[in-house]
Image (cartoon, rainbow, N blue to C red):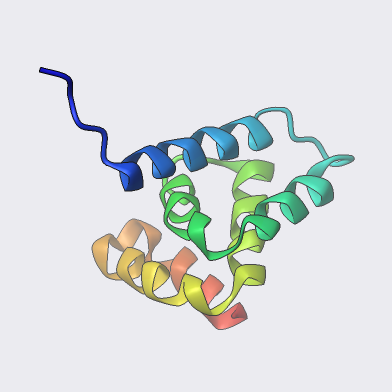
Amino acid sequence: MQAVIDSNTLKQENISEKLDYLLSDIDPATKNDVENSIVAMGSRVVGALVDKLRTLKGLQRGVVAMSLIRIGESSIAPLKALATESSEYQWMADYLLSEI
């Protein structure tokens, strides 16, 4: 019997892979282009971006954070959930929410 693939899960995996690719070779010269590419994907990437906040550091995390701010309103609920989930990320989520 062939496994059924949930199209929403597949899409989320593709989004995460695309973000991994965009963020993999980021440097100060390319960060604006990477950020613009992420923002152009719109609200469908918000969940994956919030997940990336938990694992990324430095320039990568900064690009993810600024992308969430620029995407705007659709970032609010996932960031609020992140803030309540863990005190470790509450300060970050609160800051990003204040910038939206």
